[in-house]
Length: 223
Picture (spheres, rainbow, N blue to C red):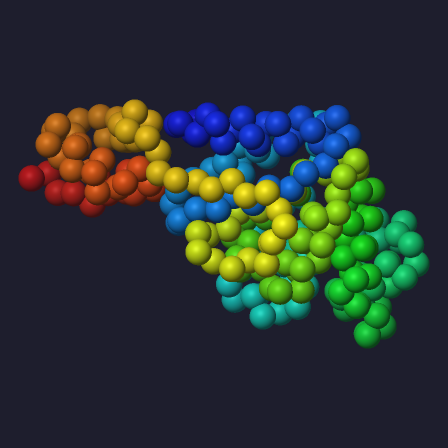
């Protein structure tokens, strides 16, 4: 269960409801490591009844491999490529090494991704650690995300604060530290027996970062 984040969960819930109603949208969650981006993505997936879900995460070691991230995301639905317009299908096959090289121009690949996502609707598409996606994958997904309208497609990206992820033109939801009430409740869940001075010190040092709240007390000695 997520402690706090009621406003953020409401925004995600609205995005999912819009997709169920046949309207599309894209949202970028941005915040520092440990702030709860992945937890919110998991919450969105858990609430995605009635929607097909495609998900992936950027991998730092593959960040220089063109279309590696897109291949991970679309791998489970590559059997639907044949239903795309011929030139778009050829571009996607070329991008993934499944057809003749040299046909994977950025425009055609972006259009192919847009067409494929629309064909899979109603759909939730989730990309965690999007700052580690390779550039070609990011550009194709961003191209599609900026053009979805009435397909019933929701796209969610999580990006580390300060990282450049080439996701311009999309709505962003910045994540900050939990407020004092939520921070205290989360700490009480994981370390209910902390002495009051220690508890206060952990709350102050964590600055509302959920991961810090969970892990800081674990590094303490009994003394």
